[in-house]
Length: 268
Length: 282
Image (cartoon, rainbow over all chains, first blue to last red; front, top):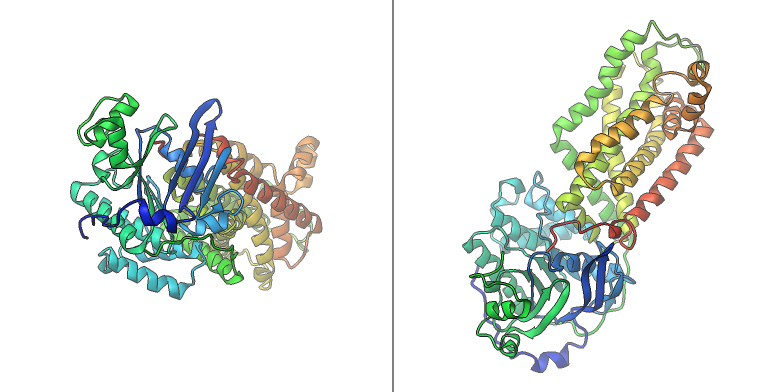
């Protein structure tokens, strides 16, 4: 696993001309659980080949937003589209372009690594032969080829996460959602996962939405969306957001925006 | 940069993709079942306890007159065998529903539901997979029961198959419908008390309904209205190469109603959406 690759390309200029259709478009989305309002008029885009960090405290509405994008819940108000495909009207076409890594582990612990991948491939209608070759290739890329036949239960937390990311890429999506993927991992495993995902952005042009409450996972070139109590408080390139708030770093910027108390490295 | 810049035209899904998805879901359910040996053993032990102990004790108490599809006097064990086959499927259907609640709590359900194929189709595949697992259990039970002198005609093992598939689908979709209303795993005890036991005892599984009618006419009507009774009778007749048309109609209609209900309950804009967040809220 390599360290995070810097994004060399200058931001905003040529890509905006190229990217007529955003990888993910969230437009005026609101959601309530009964009387409790979880999201209020949330709007932002994720561009192809970009890394967008969705920063928010626990309970900010990140998981609700992910549930709406993945069609686990129906959209109550607003619109969500993946490469222009509306998730409510054409869910099949939208979900085909989407890869997801959920916050809770979603692997079958008693099945082998390959079996887990083959099952996911089947859910996307990928033929057995094609699925087997893609699985072998992806396991090689995440350095787990030798464990292909082992039970998932025997993997470490970091290895499981890498497997989940490989699984999310099996059907070759163009948008990847990750919901706090580094929670509970050690420093090395965290760095590996972040490096791997950033590589996907630069090398394969995948658009990434990375939900987190850990500031040190956000880089100056990333797009940033600050979500607090169901509302978007700020969005744009991280360096711009920090400057606009008049802060020195993302930590302070976040605290100023939300009025929360500063914590070293992130917020619990 | 290899970014996609234009919206692609929808291409839909081919029948081969649907088949791959179906076989994948059945294959995974089968693998999971094989890995859970305790589940297989307990699925077999339960009906065998009824057969070896309960039936042996009740043999002298309950006389069975000749009723269709039987053409001679039969032992009590022979009478309750179809009921126990249906019981295996009832438990399996409810256990699949339990696993769906578990999957939903643990997040596995999400991997199924983010598949781009239509959600109704995915749930149908899941039902079919659960039914396939119940067939393994039922045939294992029939094999052991054969040594206990429960010997339906050899062709019966084949003719009972379509009946078992239909009853398996009915009980599975009932389980799925119930699972959509259960928020936590702990509530399965409630399912045992309020669904499994009443359905099993208020049916023709353990005693012929004419016997029930002698005891209580109201209970008789209740048993007649119980879809489980018709699942049992459908299996009973099919095991002897006959079709009980009334039971077939009831089971078919109930299967459709329960299945539509379950698909409706898992519709993102209705069922689950009414509830709170499924995973960790963040």
